[in-house]
Image (cartoon, rainbow, N blue to C red; front, top):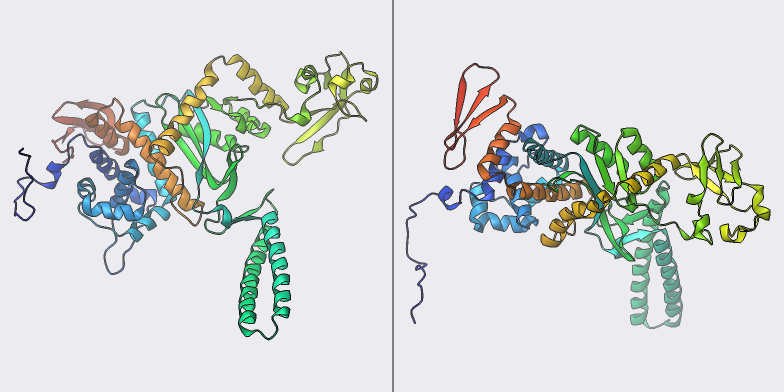
Length: 517
């Protein structure tokens, strides 16, 4: 049987085409090239990465390399270094430059703020094509594993256990040393063990001092490989040393409009994400959807002060707050603002003494009544033996009740939340495998890593949209050229744009390689 024959590897050949002809016109690598070329990287604050004895690389070339890598599931600086030698698309994109992995890694690490600004430009393009509705957004977070093992994460209890264990072992070694009197070989081995234990003891005591200094945190931690990462609950009883990525998604095309990498949980995240969403959308006439992890009174207060409607899932009542009979839970007590009093299901009135009490993050009043002592349903209402039923009302209760009312009136709207906000996470973590942070040594470098993930997601959504390749390149040009007016006339051959400074028209010819000249 005859087979198709390949070309002889040793035969010399002369290519009848240039490098540019090897890249198809509808290849997304051309969009990456045009997108970065139209950015003012110096104004965005990109740092030039110098190389010893040679001129530095242009930040535009390194940014193109990273965007291409993240869009094709390649984040490792060593992997990107290899691609610069063997990948025809990368060779075309960065014009046959071959940066080493140290230069590539340093560029990502040293430019987190500038990378965020590039991400914002992807949002600007989406807005330019009316791909962002700005009427319904959804927010959520996801956990991304850090480059720090659980073994190298410490809190006060863990350090105390280690120190107690070392003290116990040192005592055992000293007893063995006393018994081994005269046995030089065994004595030497025991002394080496004692030396190792004392080195560990010194290390743990140093970490203990650092934890003692961090008095502002409820549960101070110390991670030795990535100091800003924290040991957190990922789901159920599963825990990881990780970062938390807060994101905001617009409902129209599931595009990310904002992100922020933190090492905190969701309780205090909704307020600042809504502030940023208002600034990005330049409006507060939108509805924001969040899950029950964001159900915090102070965050509702911020949302109401911003004039933003929120729909946050209402968590179940904790066991300690549950009445023996659910009919007598606190939410079934009616508040009368005129009298500043509550009426219980039995018709009794609970009053406050007017005093405000301080908790960790809020203040509250207490409401109670003497009628509890002789109430026939007291055993159904409370398990308290002394004072009977006590209702607490914080300064944020009104805001919490406002959310509950909106959720009740929203109908099927809230059910859209999961489909909206989980879509980017499914793409990033399941399809692309970006379930961890690549960088080490701090949250700034980690933010750059996630910023490139978010940018790659948005650009991929834009490239796969129904806009069309040529229209998208035009949008890139118009979005970043401040001298071009809004009136545009385009055909297959050229784009005619009228400048602000002159009365005549300038023709920007659009050639087959999608370059303006």
